[in-house]
Amino acid sequence: MLSVVKAASSSLLAGALVLGLATSAAATPPGIPGTATAQAELAALAVAGEGSMTGYSRDKFPHWSTVSGACNTRETVLKRDGTNVVTDSSCAATSGSWYSPYDGATWRAASDVDIDHVVPLAEAWRSGAAAWGTARRESFANDLGGPQLIAVTDNVNQAKGDQDPASWKPPLTSYWCTYAKMWVRTKYRWGLTADAAEKSALQSMLGRC
Image 1 (cartoon, one colour):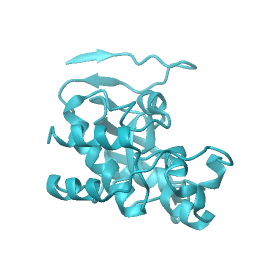
Image 2 (tube, rainbow, N blue to C red; image 1 turned 60 degrees about the vertical axis):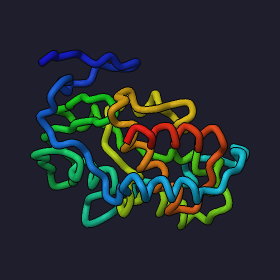
Image 3 (tube, helix red, strand yellow; image 1 turned 90 degrees about the horizontal axis):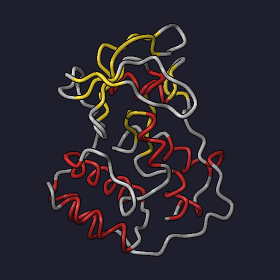
Image 4 (cartoon, rainbow, N blue to C red; image 1 turned 60 degrees about the horizontal axis):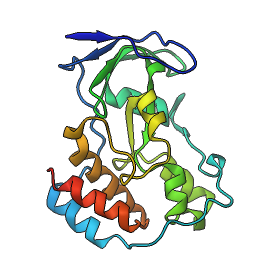
């Protein structure tokens, strides 16, 4: 098993990265559809060009809302997607391990892990969420009922930014099928549109299933 130190642009974080066979269970968000269902949902997505970013702000998608007690959405997903996660009285993860299915890395510190919005907030804004009210945008940004949130390597999530599958896919091609299913289900559930290049990329990714 090859141990690698992750380079970070601003600081070197403490978690250990392990590539190869994972020692943690893979993050599995709820509601990932089967291939046939994903194909049908993809076909049902309305095709439209991406809207303007005018007026967009992450603050218009209040996120990491309180879920229960001291636990917010981020902490809830960290516990859901990790292995042997221990939290303190404020619900912060103090130990555990997290396997990132985007790149096959396992991390031992929660600070090395981001919670990815599978369909980025800015992408949602461009594909229909600009017309939503704040309450609906908050529900979208904290969606624990579908495959919209997943714990992944922070640098990978930052490299993704707000790109759709036509311009960014997970580094592990073996995860493209699952990623496409999550993306399609999220857009379908929330009534968001897809542009032509995005839809074509998703179809190709589902072809790997």
